[in-house]
Length: 425
Image 1: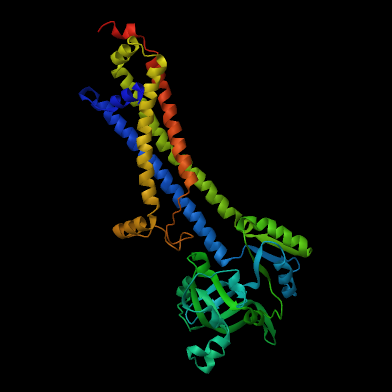
Image 2: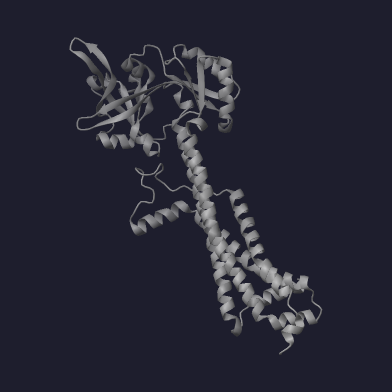
């Protein structure tokens, strides 16, 4: 250990005359600890929020959506085969998209109606947890095991979200009516198209918007209800690398040509993820102010130490210590304070971030409120994902701020004139 480091450590030990300096040093360490811990926890939550949101969006939705400019797609079987030949495409499935109203005995709600192919849809999308029922019950051939009456057995099946089921007040194997805004011409005029369905399953994606608005039918039942014959809205495609979805979408467009066009998940959710990224940057800047305040405490503590140690500095210089050595002593003292606060902040921040679910449950039980109400936020649980790059940036940035805060007091100490300091001693 160099004598500069030895002296720097000795200066940090409180004596009777240095109690106030020691208090400021403790406040500086606490400030850095809180700033580093807060940065790690908040960025971990932001990362977890973004990752969880992306996983849920890409569970219900495909990576790429292919459609025709002219509207409904007719020869979708051939288009699916052409898409599967494009490099990077894992699976493809046809879908139908429409809007309708879902009516139970007592309630009614607007829904997004999705027709899916039960044979290959789940190679591309994932509805999440099935709270009751099964996707297999969308087809009438799979429902005999339920022991339904002949009347219910003949009804087409529908799968709805958990929140939508609550809104309508329906359960598994209850019946609902779908009302289409596209009317049917009759002698009495145009009347809405309506049909009764049996609830074949209730799913929970963990994403309130989807659970409250989505309703799934089999492709055949959806075509019959919407009078689409053998047409579909488009093709949903899954790729092997979600971050290359834009390149694969362009390759599909080049292969198929006009009138086909493709959109990837990044384009469809651009505003949402851009807002999350901006919020993450803003939170980083705001919480960095805590570290800056702690850095000013380090400056204050070092200036007071320099004033307290004026005689000691003069003696060291008289014994042959150079200005660079004196400056090094106080820089090391500030860096030790910063290192202790940063280390404690990392340990505390990582401990909370890695156990965020348990911490959030404890807070909810203690104070009796929900941190993320599902009907307000996109997610109902507080996610956390520690990114090692973020932690490294926080540590390096904090130590850099601590180093910069030591320069002025150390420079003042190095410029002290021994003769002036010892004149009245």
